[in-house]
Image (cartoon, rainbow, N blue to C red):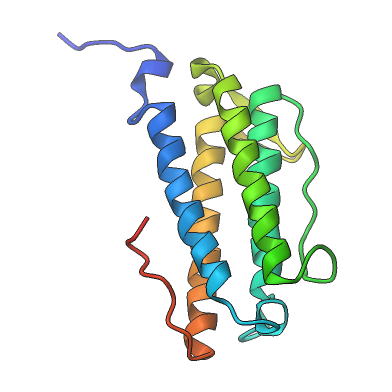
Length: 165
């Protein structure tokens, strides 16, 4: 006899475990930002990619606006980050990163368990399930962090160990 489950109980990990996992990635990305020398954080690029400061701004914006949208059902707009606007110094980016971490910690408990399997339209443009949006937020961070690793190695800087989350 096959056991049935409700959509919320079918999750592989619980919400707090997911947040801990995500925050582990965010902590590693923070250490990567901190490893960048100035002014290369906001100027250096490889192969036409954006400077890592622009990528960090994007990641922070998506995380902050994303968790707010998930918790409140009101999705703030996110804007493309090309490096021409926003903070560019390492200290300012780290301060912004920490403020985003505080937003995640504040908003996460406001998300009801059933919300993770609901569908919505993220940022007014992307239809899908909340759990898939969250996976994308983490995947996007890992992708851009990989670009940051390439930048640091090209600059002769040893990046933090990727497995130390």
